[in-house]
Image 1 (cartoon, rainbow over the protein chains, first blue to last red):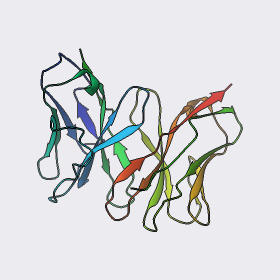
Image 2 (cartoon, each protein chain N blue to C red):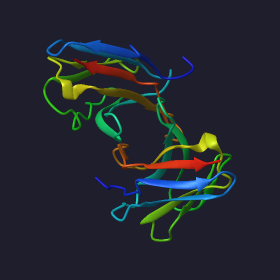
Image 3 (cartoon, one colour):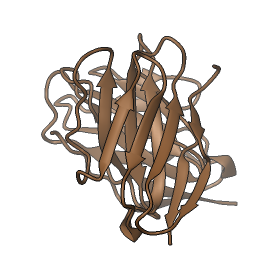
Length: 113
Length: 110
C-alpha cells in the first residue's frame, strides 16, 4: 500500500480482555517497529522485526504483550488480560530500505476501561 | 543505548527562525541523528537526518556539532503548521534500533 496501515484506529475494551492490533507496513519494507505512546508522553520502543531474524523484544513491558509478523508483511500486537495502564496509542513504523526514514502509521488508540 | 535530551518546550513567533537543540553526549560513531515531528493526533513524520555533516532539505536544516555530541534542528521560517512535538532520535547503525528522546513541544505564536 501507499503507507503504513494500522487497525483498528480506535479500540475500547474492558479490563481483562485480550486485544489484537494490526499493522500492514509499506510493501518492500523488511523491518517493522511497534511503539507505545501514553497520553502526553514520548514513544516507547516495544519490539522490532527485521526480515526472518529473531525479533528484538527488549521493549515489551510484560509477558502479557506479544507480537508476530508473517514474513515481511502484516504484524499483529497482542495484549492479553488488558489493564488500564495499557491505555495508549500503539504506533507501527517501517523504515525505508535506503535512507532508513521511518514511516509511521496513524496508530491504534487503545482505551481500557 | 545512547540517549538524547531536549528541552520540554519552546516558543517561536511566526515567520521567525527556530533552533531546536538536542544533546546526545553518548552517541557512538555509527549512530545517525534523525529528527521527527508529531502533529496533534497523528503519527510522527520524518523531518531530516544526518551522520556528521550539516544537512539541508525542503523542510529544515540540521546542524551537527563537530564532536557530534549535540545537534540543532533549524526551521528557517516558522509557520503555525510547524507547531508540533519535535523528536531527536539516534538510529543505532549497528542494530537499527531507533531510540526516541523526550521531544520538544514547539508553540508558534501568530
